[in-house]
Amino acid sequence: MKFRYLTPRGSVDQIMKDVKKQGGLNAEIQSRIGHQLRAMYDDVVRQGVPDRFAELIRKLDGPEAAAEIAKNDGRE
Image 1 (cartoon, one colour):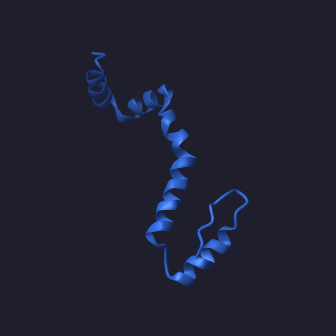
Image 2 (cartoon, rainbow, N blue to C red):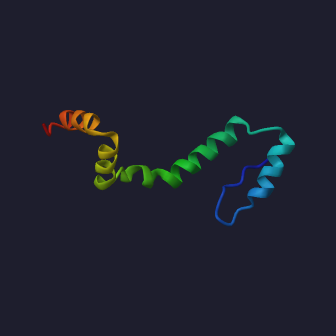
């Protein structure tokens, strides 16, 4: 099976039919899928967590967790 890059207009159904015929994904295909996923989501990962979300998480964790985080961040 010749690997086709997954694009918004690509035929995922055809690729899945080919995969079922072969009985699974070989290492090369898994590697290429991984590469494509990293390329698509790399920007998202680099953005990090916005400060307002981090603050909300600290509040939800409770006063003990917030104190520990502040201590580790050098805020205390």
